[in-house]
Image (tube, rainbow, N blue to C red):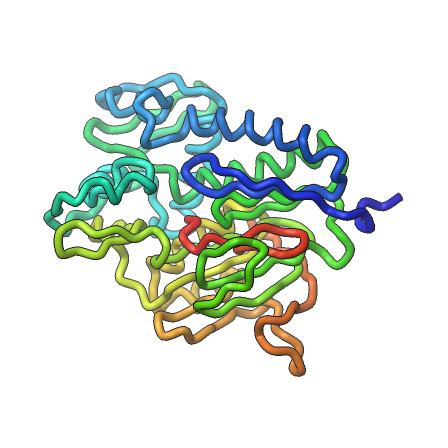
Length: 353
């Protein structure tokens, strides 16, 4: 019997400092899949966390420019981050760690409110991803002294891709994994695809969002990611800050967009593109269109713009009603890399990048 006609089952919890939602098309396999997912995310956290002093990523801070042998997991995460930097012309750059720390984002986001110390905002371009040397054959990475890495713009999305593919293969059913709105799907989808609510305000999956705009789309494959500047915000002194860094200034990006949602062949590609779009500002729509990436951009005044390929509501339906199902458009290796809710999906977190 096709899994597309089976009821779905979902589990919600937290890991990597964000919300986790797992949906499977075989309810009998939910618990075992959830256990496998928890193990994989624990490995990613121990490897890639910027906030854990015992993480493998944090150990690079003391390497003083020497080549360091790294695990295949960290090498894979770094490769994705460097590919995203190249594909986005440096708009998404993993060398923003020091800039993040300077803004006060040096701990899990839920703990930021405990520190009200003021910060001094200084324009200082980040070191740049081209200074990082990753040797996949030797399994080493070289990070210049004083450069701190932050994989926040790519690691969660990449982890969602890896987890969805692993679980779909192990369980033999359809799987959706959403990490803070970075959503990847794999295996046979439900009938009509995974119905995913893309929204402009973070909220529970089973509640219709009151503020902001939203739309429901169907996704059969690939990944969907939403990045934004309104969820992960904090104050330091008189400054209202957010976590999307402009590499040219080392400061929060000045952008006309509240949120950007992108569909792509992988969640990692989608998230890199949605984050880069915020940094690119008014040029984002043209850039996304040139890459052929379906996207939904919400301006600060609430205006919604979409690029070719993004599913449009039927003329007789209000914008909050479901649209047709589609597959995320494949992206090439050199292209950049949704947000979710529904009966069969996951809720979007606009600051998922």
